[in-house]
Amino acid sequence: MEENFNNSEFDAYTEVPEPEKPSFNWKKEAVEWIQAIVFAVIIAVILKTFVFTLVLVEGASMENTLHTGDRLFVTRLMYEPKQGDIVVFTPERDTSKPYIKRVIAVGGQTVDITDDGHVVVDGEILDEVYLSEYTGGNNKNITTTMVSNPVKFPIKVPEGHFFAMGDNRIRSHDCRSIEVGDFDNDFGCVGNERAIGKAQFRLWPLSKFGSLY
Image (cartoon, rainbow, N blue to C red; front, side, top):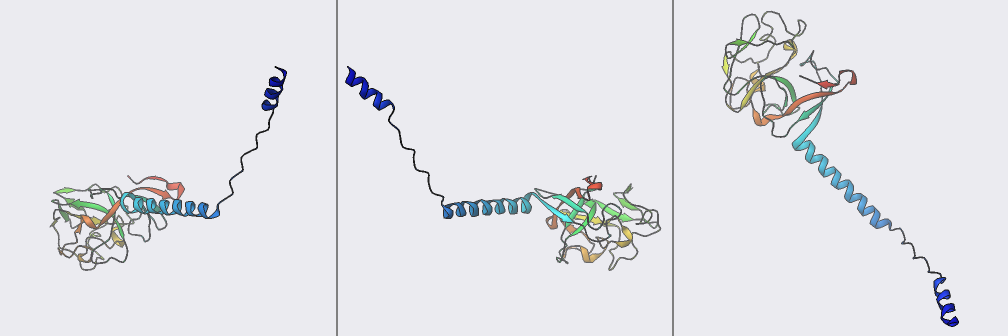
């Protein structure tokens, strides 16, 4: 009995050796980091290509709504231009850089410009509260002056197209010019497939952060 007790006591206090710590594998760690970075880049490219993108505004064509240096959040997923949208698009005749303008009319609508510069869509004068007296508001015929190769109004926008102008009517190269429209028409209209997306809100400067509508 005593012998068994001593054996049990000995067994109870036998030290168990600690397991060896695995050595650090630099190669495996580097591969895992590279895989994570590649995955993150792929996700970012997919999001930027199909879901949203960021746009830096350059030029005065959308003043006083937008100014040079403004950074905008633009949604892309399944976007189809609608009247009143601030749209980013790449003209078919000038693919050097994207344009940013406001959609005035879409497929099936008729656009005209009165002698005193008012924009008329389907027989109704647009209430363009985003214009100012310094960028085209309340000035006679500013909508058609200083435009190279101008279109002849009225025009009916073809289906699958849109007609857009900058808010700064006296300093905007837009759909009032044949040069901005697609090759399939001579009245400045842009195919919906040329639209990159809709500018939703301003990210910068922080003092103007918020929705554009």
